[in-house]
Length: 180
Image (cartoon, rainbow, N blue to C red; front, side, top):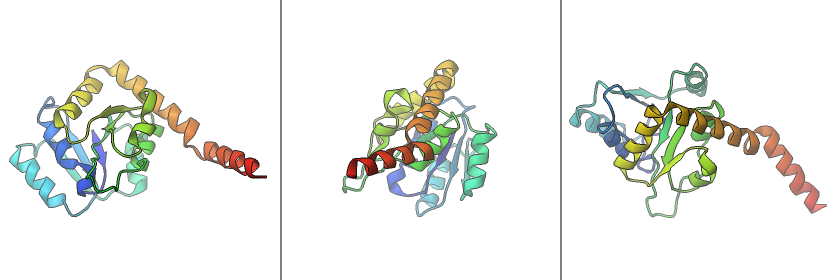
């Protein structure tokens, strides 16, 4: 499982690390990114005894990240973003759209624009700041492979239909035609 996100509070890494302790030992968590909270997350991983199951990869180039998806080295992508109550919410994360475009199932939280992206089963939504809900959603995707595949396929279709370059150009043309 991969979480491609900067180590900042809004991304909710600590809840995903905590969720890992409720998952089977064979589930590994790869964290790709850098940021001010990296040391805090490394400390949490050590305190929870999860060092053998967590790989902090640091910054990954866009090319390397997409290669992980293309080569199917990742089973699913999790982004446990959280609402900090400051009026600044997660938009629609490109990191989720990229994973979805490769047919990977994604798990994220009901914050910001994420519910819009993952609606109609295009991904799995859970409440923010809830490690147990994250763990249950992730466990279900690992346990029920047909379900995980269906979620991945729905996500891929959603991104292709509504967020591909072609879809965006088509929408812009419609907007432009409506103005003339």
